[in-house]
Length: 110
Image (tube, rainbow, N blue to C red; front, side, top):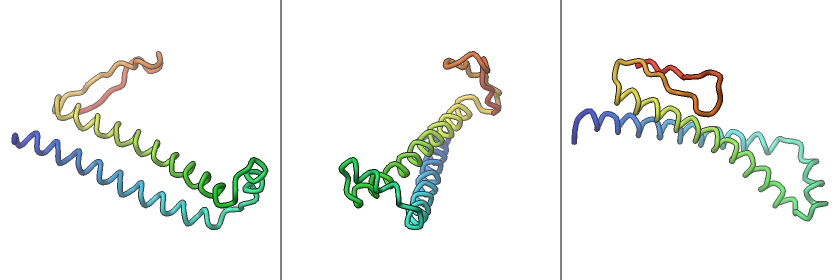
């Protein structure tokens, strides 16, 4: 395998592993924080037909979901930058903003 490709692959593996570890740590931290949270809102869930156990699961998975979306987006962004820097080493790139008009482009320095 090409050494440059291997180094890109290694870099991407490290990015994924760093995000995976950080996500896991933040989820565990939030689990512990949730044990200390006020749970009065679970009474509202019960009015809607959920048991306390189900309500706690709803809260847990909602919190986990927020972290997963955040880390997935960050991982994709960082991996994309790594690939672009690999394909255009040492060059500054301007990437068009296809979502809005401000800013018109994003600059990525190599």
